[in-house]
Length: 330
Image (cartoon, rainbow, N blue to C red; front, top):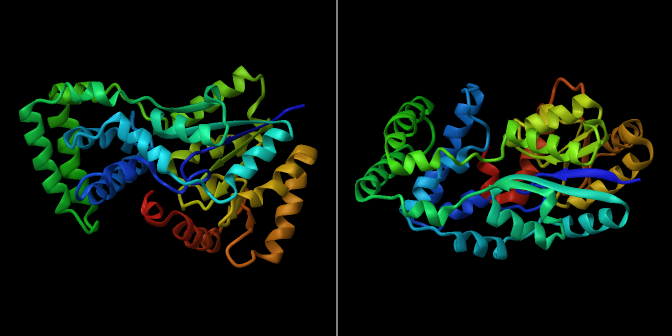
């Protein structure tokens, strides 16, 4: 009988952040992205209607177009992207041991499909964000380009990121009023990044196609875009794993693993195949007593745990070590 596992791409399987790396292709793009990422966090935390965590990938599109970033740039980044230590071996072992492997990611489709192909994950088992970037270039007019250039200058004055009220006010004005009045803005509104509820929707589609309830699934995530998916699987009695996660993901997971290598999950997944959640809890609580070794294997049982402060510190340290610049993002 097959077992079922679904990974987030960025973090669990690759240390890079696709959108962040794309923005680095033009001057000060990394700084613009960090402000937009904070704006994304603010909108998510206020639970704005029709806004999902991960919609940063919609917010950056005008700036990618303004700097002539193309779909070929997306593919080139995927070619150069590294994999998380142990990811290739873990996926290979799982597929040899009757696991069906899936990936749900906010990353743009061109990037996601190229990178998951490196891991031998079938394309029909991948959900990602479609982006007709080259077609969107055709909608940009000179007045719109001038607007983008001015907004970009304004965003750069928001660094370092200390004034959430100003970020919220100025970017609300741009994204809710000025940009939607343009042809480019109207075109961008059709892009729906696969994050938050849309990740859970994609997971539910996979469960229905495979006739497997959430209680039979393992999911692995690390950030705010994953929390609904993690929470749903944990609530259903499945196994939700937070890997080198941040404070937005950890409270919603069943277990946590902070480690340089994701291959440390292999023992947990073998136990899950045999004894499901009960056996995993026994193993993880035992590992938690021993603690990790150097930079590997810090396990924690999270389901029902109220105080996560010590766990968050360990994951923050490992996240920074493994993901470098991307670790700053929500």
